[in-house]
Image 1 (cartoon, one colour):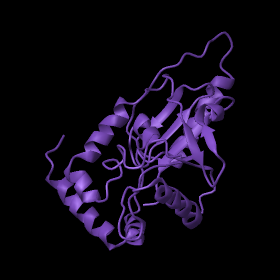
Image 2: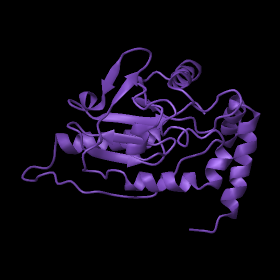
Image 3: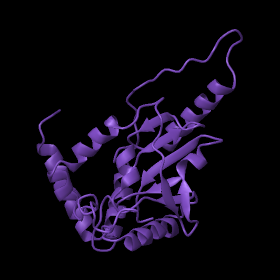
Length: 147
Length: 77
């Protein structure tokens, strides 16, 4: 399931949402131009669902059967989600005899591989302003004191 | 689905310029919001959303009732 949020890098050709009609048009553009085959759900104009789940531009959550959070990642890695699902479903389906499955949590750093060339092409698709604004943002990030 | 009235609380959320969003610390606030959101093991917030193209309102709890639900959040840009 894909949850369509606000536009992360709006520009001249793909604009920010100023109406729900424009948001629906953006979701349709996503479906038609990227060929995404999953079902798409569209959040409301104020981002109610996006706010409740934490506002990151490309995050993934897995909700277990019955409605408890099983996985949250502040960036999407399909390989990571798939690996988690295999472990999660196997752990619930079977465990060694005479044992019970007890839930615990982990937090760990993961790595993804950013394709800068493809990202730049995507920014250009949004409009020239998107590239210039991202360059300014990179300078702002460089000027921030280390956390 | 347009639950929120158009323009009501939505203007700041739908920022028009990414550099202004970063200059205002929006990215830092949003990262903090992610870590403040429900933890593994806690109940997931339930909402009804507009299904594309015109499948009406879809409730998340209807999707996770019988099997795990994977939700990727994102946009075109």
